[in-house]
Length: 470
Image (cartoon, rainbow, N blue to C red; front, side, top):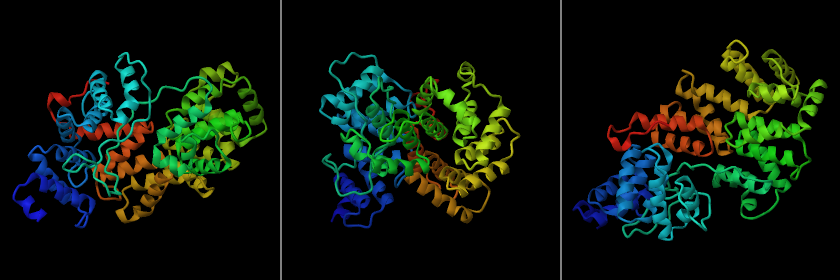
């Protein structure tokens, strides 16, 4: 009966039929058919249908990925007073991807949603007000929530879906945590990873109010750091810097921070910069390096690679590129896996040495043989970017998937590339945008630039979608 009514043009039946196909209620789940019928209802301006169609367009589910068409549907729903659409509009106006960033307009929409009692909007209202330079007493900041659950024809949230029909929005960033509240800083770093990874790290309890990290959580962080999670590496660096759960060790803290920086952490560069200005840091670094300590050799060589020359000079620790390569080589010969990875990066990019990609692969293969997941991910990335046949890429794709699940942002960005280009997987621009967006939210500039490139490739010519210069 529902199908017959939908076929006669009944927009409520069309929308209900689409929802049932999306969620697998009474039919085998079929996103293409779901998008088709929801689109039919959206053509008649049924507001929940337009909102749901926007979600499908935004994610490329059952329909070609098109965030610009999605924006127009979100805008219509917001103008009609749908509170979730108002919140979505605020987020999109803050991203500088679909339309030019406009904090004043973004604040207008988020305040409308907050005034209607929408909790996610209330939580971020203060941050939007600050960005828009609007005085807003008694406001509080919070982690932006995802908006956009599939709605039924009455506008209520459709239940029963385990597929997570939610667009993922870029955050607008966090202010640096001031003072010495280490727990607050650790929470801030972990929240940037998102709830899924936080759960994988075993850190949910700490974020929900627990004041300390225990030994089991530390083990989870160690596993995540080995998989290449910049957030886990940053948290471990802070633990060793301040002696949280573990014995204070500034040199080991700097090694974790260095690895986090290499893997795209947005917070680690600042923490590393402050750490190496501790009065005890460079004396310990030089003393241990002189004793052929591989950790100290790696840290010293890597600090030179990061361009900290003024600070190194001030501390009497300036080294030439040749000396930096020598330190990294000595550390690598003693089995230091991060040093092997760093040397591979030197040869891959031609920094300080002649560019030699095969040499880079040799270093990464040695590190991988010693158990470095970071190195294995880099080898897998090289494989999916090579002209090898798709069948040869299956093990590399599997490795990237597993590493991404465990927190590797490098693997997550690489998977985005695979879905964007169809390298080793069926091309899926929606999935690519989701992966890039997740990494950009975690602080990856490479992911944001890739996402921006994808948007620019299909950007309409109209004035509405023309971006101002960044």
